[in-house]
Length: 276
Length: 276
Image 1 (cartoon, each protein chain N blue to C red):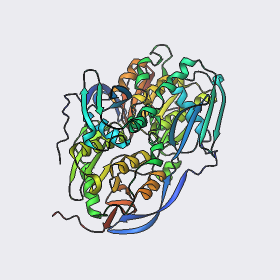
Image 2: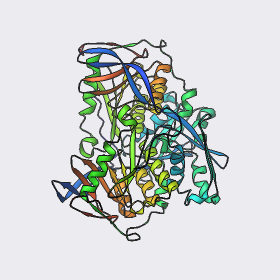
Image 3: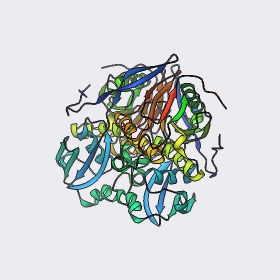
Image 4: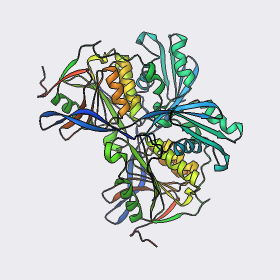
């Protein structure tokens, strides 16, 4: 197998202080997170899109993207492919007919990032800072209970194993669970449900079966959720954005355990989840 | 918990004939797949984007998306929200300042779909039909061996559990494994690697840890891979596109078993994976 090591010199993981909940205790723990870095693609001096990516093999990523979009048909059409890590830019100079280039120019952007889309918004996001809202009181067992409800939901996943689910919950009950093929879409459906139903997210939990990337964190911040909880992991950028926005991040809720990044969104106490 | 059943009348799953490999046998089996349907969003009569989605809770999805993008701040700004299932359109009439609308108009599209981006390309994709290439000969054990190599790769996933991986392989060996935060990006990196290295995908396998949606299948079709293999599931649209393109789809490779949708891309035989 070819060497698939990183040649960019960019770090691919970040060690971050967090807490681990296990066996009834919250303990300080260093947690390794994948880096997520936004890069902007220019093709023939035109800005095409930005996407957040693990900062390795960027030539492969952006060339592959242009192949997948039907723009590039032969390697000889690549006149130049320069990665500028300092400015987080990729410049592609291509010798292809205009009609092929228009495929991506007209679309403007696209969904390939999957972790991308909202990268620009991040910096200007009207994310409320910790302190502007009361920290939500919640116990560790409530986290486990709400994730169990998401995990055992008898929806399309139970038939197809092919979708993600997301939910909005109070500490004591799950309010709504919705599913979609994309983890972002499932979160958007929850955001839209709360918005349309007049449910204020400021004292609600946002749970998801998918990973928490910058895009998911931005969606939570826009809606003012104080905490995002995932059965899976989070990217380093998402956790950093949670810190900036005062949104707590909980990952790997499984087997009665989880990782916790505390940013002021909630006041977490070890203990059972008592209903009123 | 609120009722989260579908109210659109659209079916959310599809039963599709496939084969199940288990205990050394390939047997016919009906497999349930999640539906994936492209919808196009118009805001104030301007086309904003298309995304492929599980066809339920579309008001929530597109309103939630506009909230997440920072366009919608109050429910009272929604003058109309009409879902046209027949034409697969969502029309939003919003009373918001132009500068907020420009956030999505300028971006043109975005990545929220996660299963979206390439929906339009699908219909015009230069996907080679079965028969234009020799079916690849491959044994069931080779599928299991190559997925085991992807599963046990000691990459960023082994440190963070926060990324997807994809690989290109012959029946006998894995050629390259690359990772990214987004499952689409990992596939694009493989596509780009093959393109840049002059590796012809026509007799290679494309493996991924992520689900196979329409976008992933389109990327495989553009590059002429005869088979896409996932540790996870596939959407109904991806399997249908595989059929149109003569690309075999294998899902749920785990525990020595998998699901197989045969479309002429390979000639699969039950047996061990012998090296030359």
